Length: 119
Image (tube, rainbow, N blue to C red):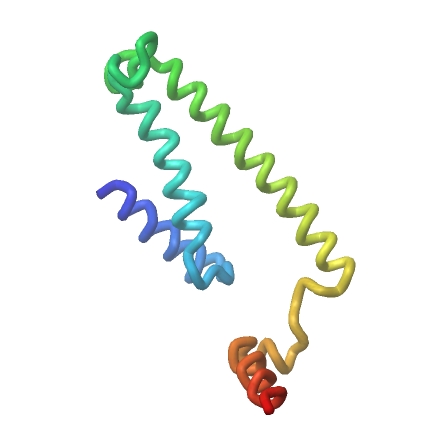
């Protein structure tokens, strides 16, 4: 239930408010719901999950602290590598399609191209 709420909210904010072009909701599903999964494990872990540490709900904050450090590390790593990749693609001139293709839609342009090349 919580994951569904997080997905719906993050998808709405990314697509409608921030205008992020993410047609398959990859950031909402893998980014925000993945972050929730990481934090939820640290919040609700029982003694059976980890022999030495329970989650925050059961009185131990150490797993949550480790999860927060992990989440920040993952976010920084992915942000840095993604920025380098997109900057490189932009400098090579291959990040975006031409304006006509963007306005018509790349799927329409690619489909019409394949029909022109068929025998």
